[in-house]
Each structure stands twice: as C-alpha cells, then as structure tokens.
Length: 233
Picture (cartoon, rainbow, N blue to C red):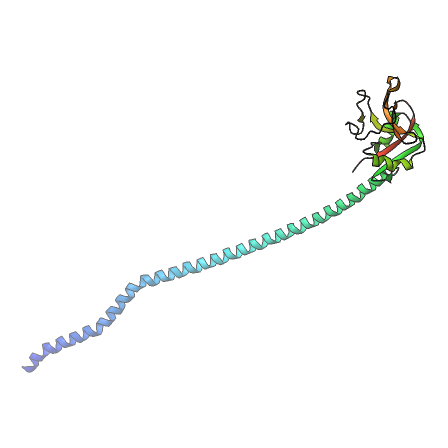
C-alpha cells in the first residue's frame, strides 16, 4: 500500500530531475543558435576588413610609387633645366665675347678722344656726301658735335688751319641746321665771324677749321678732310 502511494511521487521527482539535467543543454543550444548569425557576421566583417586593409595598402603603395616617380621626373626636369641654363649662360658669354670682338673690329680705325671714339682723316679729301658715306663704311657717322668740351678735346689732334666736315647741314631749309646723323637740330653751333653767310646762295654744309676751328658753311661739293665718330653704345 505504501509502495503504491510512493510510486507516483518518485516518478514525478525523477521527471523533475531529468528536466533539471536537460535544461542547461537546451539553453546552450539556444544560445548557440542565437549567436551563430552574429559569429557569421563578425567573420564577414573580418574578411571585409582584411580586404580593405589590403586595398588600402595597395593604394598607399601605389601613391608612394607615383609620388616617387613624380619626384624623379621633377629632379630630371630640374637637372635638364640647370643644364640648359648653364649652356645658355655659356652661349651668352660666347656671344658677349663675339660682340666685344665685333665692336673692336668696327672701332679699328677709331681712337678714343675724351669720352668718344673718332677717326680723323688727314689725307683723303672728299666732298660732304662722300665723307658721309666713308664714315658709314667705317661703321660710324660724320662728326656730330654735342658741346664745346668735345670740340676742345679734338682740336689738339687736328692739323693746324685744316678744315674738316661735320654732319651739320641746312640742305632742307635755309638756316635750319640739322644733324644728318639724328635728323634733328644741331645740338652745338660755334660759328666763325660773319658765319653762316651762305656765300653765293649755295653753301649748305658745315665744316670746322681755321686757327680756332670755328664753324663755317661751305659748298657741299667742296673736297676737304673729315672726322668720323663711332656710334654711341
């Protein structure tokens, strides 16, 4: 009788114990099922992260390589430009030497008197037009006096009582004395007594001469010595 009474109680207790033993297993399985998607997501994110890091590393490396190439190209360009600058400087130096040589060649008949360069023709006598062309052939122009100081520097080099053509004339208009070198009015006029007188109405070219080398108007066809002057630099 007692056994019949206890059997249901024992059976219930056994079932409860089984429930207790099974319950932790059921919770673990449940948790695993819930965490499985998250684990998969984490794995996917890790894969993406590795891919991104790989791409970033590749891109960074590519940028570094590109910058390195650009720097190399700039260095090459700078070196090339430096070489060209050096060559140009050497060429300019050589050209400068040639120019100076050419100047000396052009000035060969000229000597420095005062601040200018002159060629005084003491032997050959030409009319005014011939004197103009002769000076051009020498690479200069017929004497253009700027002031008395220039004339005073020349006088000791001139033949006593000699006469020399200057570039002054009034061929265009009577008594309007111009420099054929510049086309403008003569800057310095130092006339002798009673000059200019346009003797016979045909004296249109100006010379210096006499004991004090003052200016006089002469027939342009008159042959006399002349003075050439180098062009100003």
